[in-house]
Length: 102
Image (cartoon, rainbow, N blue to C red):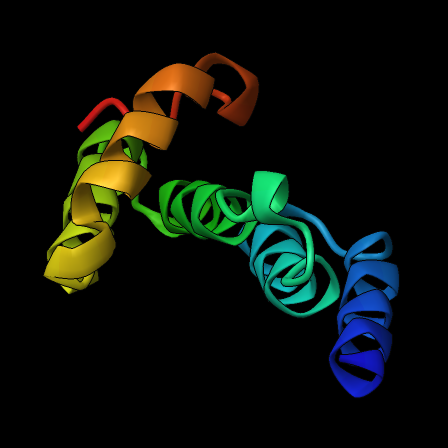
């Protein structure tokens, strides 16, 4: 866990200097590594990944691209935890930039 947190911290630090899709992608990587030990933060990496996809999409297509990424993420969820994650997304969507409206 110490190595994952350190790597996540480096990604978060690198994100500060970036803009747009690259910044969101770096934050997604940082969240994935740095907060794996905190159950309440499990949506961060997914939310930042959706923001990265939106930022990288051609003009006028960002919302659709974000919805496709959100749905792709949901399709990857193991059945054993699927409903738990979906319920958490519904409960905390507002604090996650409403990216889980897909």
